[in-house]
Length: 210
Image (cartoon, rainbow, N blue to C red; front, top):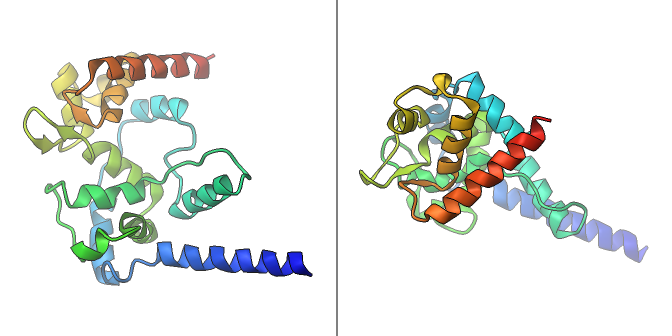
């Protein structure tokens, strides 16, 4: 009986916690969130050769929902699984008030409060999709330090780095480009860390291609 009560109490806490972190109504209205999600829905998909490389390096990472991420975090904390996969929808909240290439509608103060980015991510997930969040994140959460601005797309970076579009790149070039992208800024601050990341991805690629 005691164990049942404890289990019910834990379940209640988890449900309440989920409701709190998924409730975005204080950050923006329904219509505003639909407007924000349109920024994601308008993003063009990258070329298949890029996704082929990314999916081998990071399997099942482009379609992780906010609910799946939150569930994974809980299971990790209570020891039912090791680690969890991230949904990129909650990365966009941070990017939205730094990247001025897009218009967003929300309560800035509420966004910056505890779990604000996560709650914003739940709203984007509702009116867009995890794969669209990924496409937006990979294209637009990348800072061009040489010109003090965000890249307009990953394809712009491809043309700066290789003077050609992504669909023309080899697998090795895409791996190098992803290595740069994961450093979040270009040019990179730490060349040694970049080389380590690139070597790590090359090893993962070779293993996945066996």
